[in-house]
Length: 361
Ligand SMILES: Cc1cc2nc3c(=O)[nH]c(=O)nc-3n(C[C@H](O)[C@H](O)[C@H](O)COP(=O)(O)OP(=O)(O)OC[C@H]3O[C@@H](n4cnc5c(N)ncnc54)[C@H](O)[C@@H]3O)c2cc1C
Image (cartoon, rainbow, N blue to C red; front, side):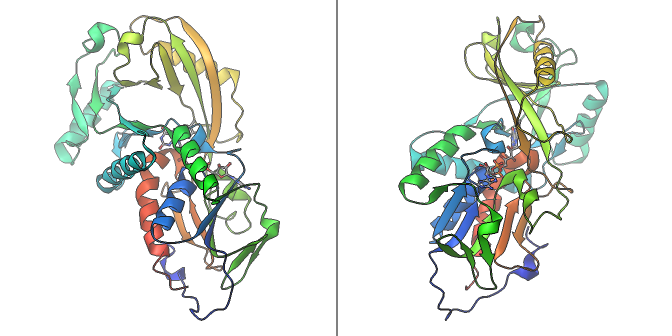
């Protein structure tokens, strides 16, 4: 997992007299910073997180879907066999720790978009190990007493669910704040001094700094040269009249509709690689609403309740960017989780924390 950066993990000097206040300073309390901080703490490390109040947090607007098979070609996420059980375990442990459920298993019904897609699924099931992930075909118009607009039928993707990210982030922030582990401030690299043995930021002297700052990492002098490919995404919340009885599953057609109770749905999302900000637009809201209505056999009357946008932190190649900087071994990256942070981050946080704790410094 960390092969790309492996050779740059360096050893410090145990007799070093530097008065460290912390082991690691983490920039960003999105899902990445949160889970990594908790994993480091679990291993006895002193951490401090600096976050600007989720000003640009993708985690705060993410749908939180855990879905192992995605895209038109029904591709299984690389490493899904390890990533999903780890995510389920780690989210369940967090639930126990904080006395609430953050993760919920929810059936995920995917409509066929074309006959070609049906063929792809049949091929996957014949040749590859997809049986654990893809359910049997559901004939058109049979689910929900024919109330869905699944003209070609569909199938369930197994082991899917949804993480309530805002609840998880707010709950952990409260805990971090109460224990003095969260500094609510804007991190400015001008205030950072990096040496071979330590990093200094205001009154903090740490053994390392870890950039978990989402797509804003592109502004860092240490990591701006990497091939970042951030993508803006928007979602809306809608009330769709007469759809309350269809809320037993997530619906995935041209858009994904997540049941929120009653007749409310959360509908998303799009990809925009040109305009990178967190401002929702009327055009995307109109598109999402129209597509959401098409998920049903009858076009339900819609009421727009809310609109949100954020930027996914992604990098070319689609594999997260994790490890130390090539020239500055005290500067680390834990980023690039793209549109699958909910799936990737738990296991990566666990393994990266273990790797960081192997260091003798
Ligand atoms: C519309 C949308 C829908 C999505 N849906 C899903 C989904 O269903 N499933 C899924 O797995 N993923 C989804 N994603 C992707 C998911 O959001 C990301 O993979 C994940 O949240 C990334 O987490 P992160 O902690 O790396 O980054 P972020 O959540 O962006 O966290 C970075 C944090 O750093 C802070 N920060 C940045 N700069 C500074 C600074 N200078 N000083 C202090 N703090 C700073 C930010 O404010 C933020 O709090 C979606 C994304 C979007 C936009």
